[in-house]
Image (cartoon, rainbow, N blue to C red; front, side, top):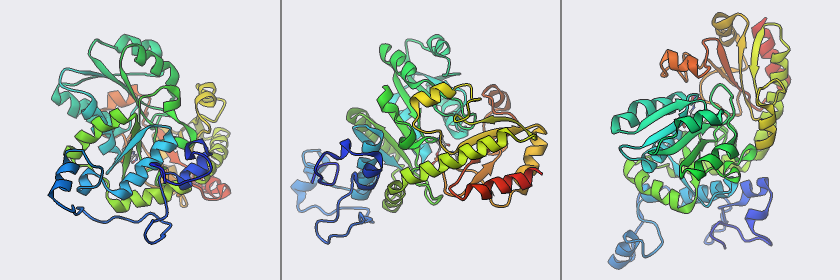
Length: 400
Ligand code: LCS
């Protein structure tokens, strides 16, 4: 058995993505032969004697102590995700926001500065602008898709460049290699929220990004039944974040870690279907006479279509669009769909539709929201894995 899991003819890291998604980090139980990784539903772990307990606390002996500090089901998930993202290590947490906050708190201190994109998930924006600033960390929100804006915003005390690509909900992309090269030359850590793509479609570490995080609530789970987050990076960076995260306390439960292990096994097949369906729906919307704009990186009309093809292996399942009738028309559409659920979250097997300005991004002050391109009329669609004709029919009926 290897540290990462199963024993094969060749290293699991050299195998294909789907094989890694099924096998990495997981082994049949050596005692019972159980194929599915057990849910170690325990808060604490018994020591054989005082010396063993002391050695584990002192880090002289590997082994478990207490589930807030680590748990075997959580470890299997972390090992699988580290391999899927091409990182050295991972840390699983109780939510995407637990991952965002642990990363930012661990990698900055009072007096530091962050350069962040202005288009971010609403709670990430408010965490940075409301909470971090309270503790003396300044944040400059800019358009990180323009390298000149990043160069201008960087200061001597800049510690992190933070962005989502594609951004929630504008679908704007950031050139990961360009940003990573600039940041590295200035000793700044790059952090990407890779939630919209999952490691199947985008692996930022291959482009030089230092820290990748996910709201694992979304595609990693895939089934709309878990809230969770995960961070992937080099071992030393993960250890810094882990040390802080254990005191912050946003630990993932063993059951949720297990649900994510289960979800990940089908990540590749789910993502292919999300991608295929979304492309069909984006084309349908783009050709509809009631639709003004469609933002989907898989459409040649997307301003960064070339970049999408360069740094992504697929375009994902997320689409934003505006109707010619603006907010009122969007509201009617969202109230009339029947198969698509009017709900926030994304990345589920079910198709979800929502209104960013009044829902996921309602927390962002109006002027900041508009500056980020999140208009009142923008509608966001998370395309599920249903039969695409049925989703199109539902949208067509509602638009009519
Ligand atoms: N990052 C992104 C890109 C997100 O979309 C979300 C949640 C988070 C982080 C936070 O993750 P959580 O703590 O919820 O697991 N996004 C949501 C959305 O767009 N609709 O509902 C939640």
